[in-house]
Image (cartoon, rainbow, N blue to C red; front, side, top):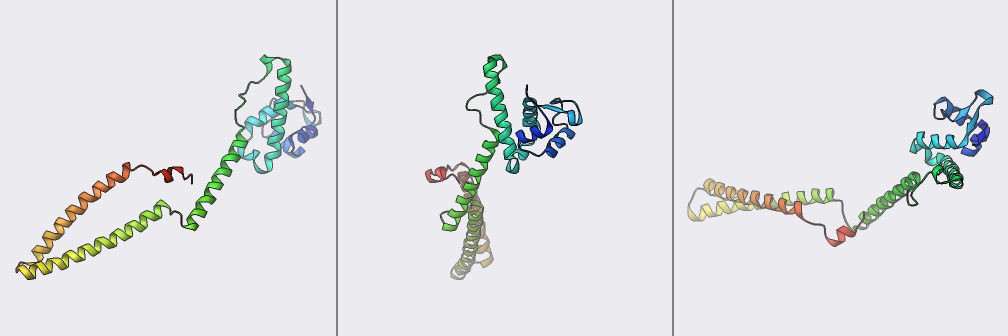
Length: 207
């Protein structure tokens, strides 16, 4: 068991002596020291274990990276001592158990790389966002529908002129037929869209 003064503990943890005092005041080192004031002596192993549990992971990133490395080094040394003392005293960890901080950094870096790749592909015109594609498609389809309905009204007038029938009746019949067809086709296409699989290119694009 390694007992240290506050200054020595601060050095081992890569923090200031004031930060050690803050840990004590916040209760983060409860049960990890003996004595009070200048006579206070800290158990290095217990301090490392307690801080590893009680410090927020955000505190161990950025400026706290040095503290994280120090904690990892202390725990690693403690593990080696435990192995020398015997299997019953050693803390068993899987060899492939990822360090949370390193995993968080890796995930953050991967997400940032993915975001930049998306931006580059958008700038190159390789693809567009699905939301933007839906807006553009809806606008174009709306314009086409308006053109078709104008054509049907014009066609109704011509049919009425040629056959001598009532224009309003012909227009109503054509519009009802068109809208029934439009509704059934819209439902069918919506069902197809819900079950449509991704293409090979879409599946491979990790963006």
